[in-house]
Image (tube, rainbow, N blue to C red; front, top):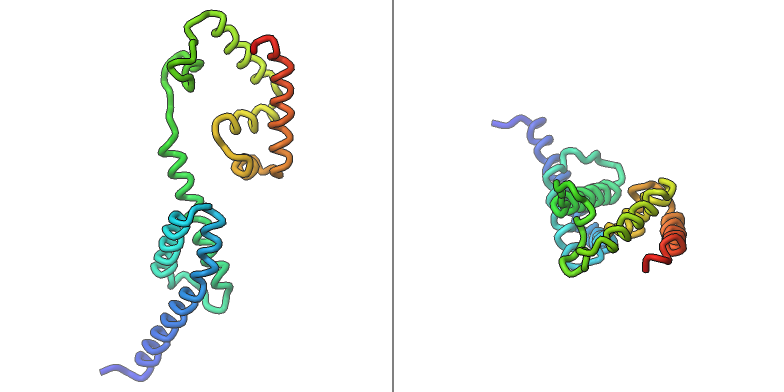
Length: 181
């Protein structure tokens, strides 16, 4: 037979659980908008919303009542998005273990067989590596496929600074390499 104290505790836990689920349901629209902002894709946003909701439900005991519930959910969603992004980047990373790294990103029909073109590639590499680090790194990341926003986040720089450094780097390389076009 249950005691009155244990029955009160069980009733409180059930009520808290119901409130938690109601708050989670009320936050779904806001979370979906945030997910769309992060992913820029409706299907990915739906997946992220579902993953966030499941994670919140699995970790409901970690939530402290009377604190910012939506903030807690946004943090879960942001962390899931970042972890998923890192996983995708890690899975798509290719490590070339060949000795000659000049050929790593060249297509087969680039006509690289001539020694004159090999000299051009060496000149381009020389010019890029001669750049100051604060210009070389954002430029290298950009030509590797990173978006301005991603570069700004990774280097902890304003997006305008990243854009201007890449722009000035392009101009400088065009001036230095005008004979190699």
